[in-house]
Image 1 (tube, rainbow, N blue to C red):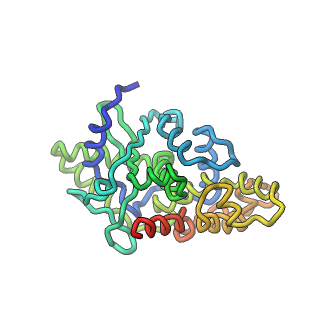
Image 2: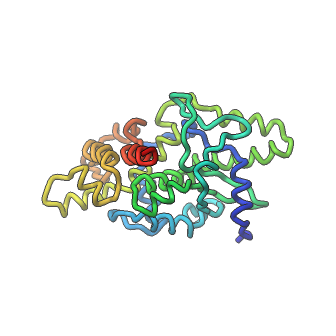
Image 3: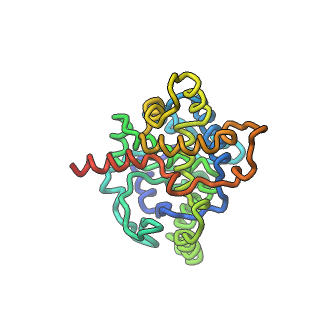
Amino acid sequence: MPALLPDQLILDSAFRIPSLPRGMRVDRELTILGSEREAKKARAALEFDSYSPIEPLDLLRRIQASWAKSVKSDQVLHRIIVLEVRDADLNQPPKKFVPMRTATTKSVQVVYATTKFVQAGDHGLYVILLSSSIMECLTKGNPFGKSTLSHEFFHIWQHAHRQLLEKIGRFYARAEAGDRPAGQQLHDILTNRNHEAKFDCDSQANALAAAFSMPAEGLQYLETISTNKLSASGIARYFQVSEKSATIRLENYNEHKATLLGDPLRYNASTHTTVLRASRATSETGASENFVKSQNA
């Protein structure tokens, strides 16, 4: 086990490394069935069952206590650490390479959280930086906090995302040491955004976060114990998510139930290659809008 670095040193290192920009391309697409399976594995790794709601602060505690090696034991990985930072610090524009921008509007976007890989000798750290606003959401039970933390966690969980984080962290360290080819490689990674939604890292993380917070087995369980028809409001109350997110998840559940629950007699092979559309994969959109409005009030 490597010696732990002081939090301030980790922060100083993390702030210098470019963030994973919105709209980054990953090398593997994510299917509806694939997102359900990965979310189920993540629940098991963090010792959650496959049907119960997840408390926000409990999720934070379990992620903080975890090592990526225990999460994905097939590879030699690194420790996960979660640090709180001021909103203003998290939204400082990067000094080099490319700014944090959306793929569609090209406008600078407010950042509530980001995940980076920090090289520390022969080892490294996956660092999730959460703004004070998100920490407050987690403490008060605002669904936006849990969806944001889940989203960042899945950038570490998914192998293709994790590879991007590590490449950015390592190429940046080499570029800072004067390696010009590494700097060019870093620039190429950060500007590679011309791709379909199914290869988009944020759409994938949102889809995984939704499946993680509202697993298909949990929705089936809720159907079983409920006297009324499964509704978005009932899902939102039970799983402690926004009603907008619950509505999107319920639509996907009703449309792909046989696939999500693994019924081989009703399995439609075409569904396996169907990817959650970006517009429907946005996790906790309603909670995000309400949160922003409350901050501006």
